[in-house]
Length: 232
View 1 (tube, rainbow, N blue to C red):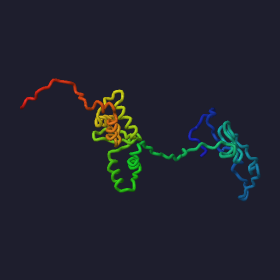
View 2 (cartoon, rainbow, N blue to C red):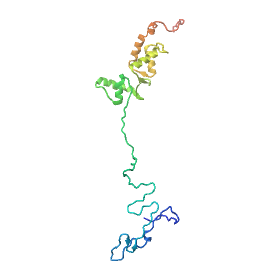
View 3 (cartoon, rainbow, N blue to C red):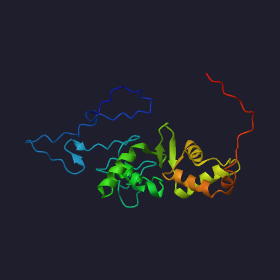
View 4 (cartoon, rainbow, N blue to C red):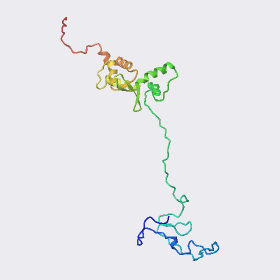
């Protein structure tokens, strides 16, 4: 429809009011009075010369067929023509990223680590059953293999060499008191470390310690007066 929904003021230039084609001269849209035929020539009409085209208002197209008026800030090239910048992508590009789960575990715990991560068991049936039974007390915490003790303490699985260094530090370090093998293992486990040969390593350490072998036969308890035990 060419009729606006509001009636603008004649003095206002902000709203363009298209002219009614019926209000222009009688030559537009009419044909010559004859035997039902039209004798309209190029640029003329039967009633007289064709009325001059209306001047284009602000924001309207030019009077030529199919030609658009180039306004300020617009480009005469059609969209997608050569020399024009391509439109920005509407969708984000999806990039496939491979995620690898890396779990730090000592050499003796590799079969348990493989079973917990990827459910891989060795071909030997007896060894596979042992791993399935032992894996129930192991878990992965912060990409490290830990063992949950009976008291609920999570113990980090250590290499045998690292475990031996821990025992030496506890046994004869700065605060070492040359305790027995079971006391050494208990203290190491309470601090959150575990390896399967801890007790055997502690026994070998105590046997090779010169201080423990030299003073092991002497009484270490303080002297006190003998007390009689009454018979009840």
